[in-house]
Length: 80
Image 1: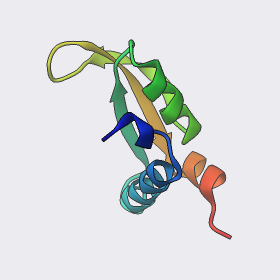
Image 2 (image 1 turned 90 degrees about the vertical axis):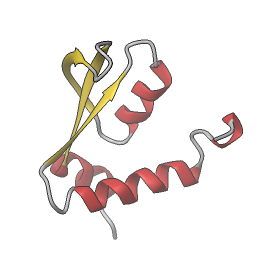
Image 3 (image 1 turned 180 degrees about the vertical axis):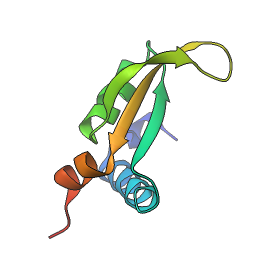
Image 4 (image 1 turned 120 degrees about the vertical axis):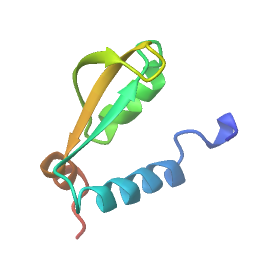
C-alpha cells in the first residue's frame, strides 16, 4: 500500500473491524512489532495495545509483544 494511504481513516476502521471480530472469540489479541518500527508501535498503542514484553519472531528477530484485550478495546471503541 502506498505511503499516502498509511494511517488514514480506512486503515483505522479496518483495524477496528478485524479486532471487533477477533475479540468475539478470544479475550485478547497479540501483535508482534519490530523494535525499530516506531510508527507501528504508535499505531498499535492508539488502538489499545500495551507492550507486555519481547520475544523472537518466526525469523528469530526480536519483536515487542503488544496485547489488546477485549475490555480495553471496548472501552476505546464502544459503539453508540
